[in-house]
Image (cartoon, rainbow, N blue to C red; front, side, top):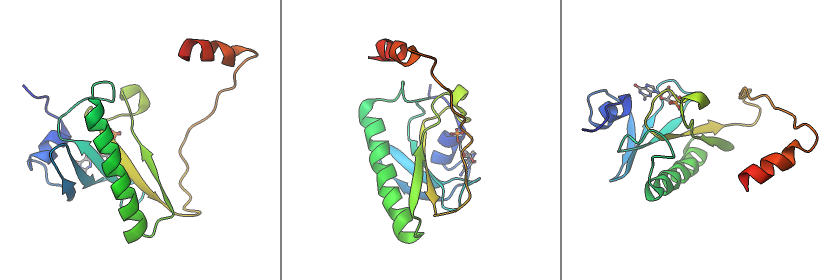
Length: 134
Ligand code: 5GP
């Protein structure tokens, strides 16, 4: 049986949404709690939890549709750029365990700051990471 999420309920019309697009693999809605107005979500029709579960053809398609909406946001909202991001797993801040791509319109000097801090590698530590990840 399919896992039920807020997004499967939105997909099926059980929870109302402002749907902008749908096809055989995904649908697009306005985020109800936007970081910037016009913030959209590109959501897989099937409730894969994260990128590791999501087949390559589906994730490729989600990215293609995110690109399509990046162009639309630039054209219609006259934004200067977008943040395109996936919260991938609960430890990364993913609240809804159903893969989706955020596309957030951005404007010059819009004052939005993402709260990432940075670590520093100790001496030679970056080489160890390279060896682990190569
Ligand atoms: P996550 O943290 O999982 O990457 O993002 C989930 C997003 O879904 C959040 O930005 C949140 O505002 C949005 N969201 C949660 N519930 C609803 C809903 O019922 N309708 C809509 N349109 N967006 C929702």
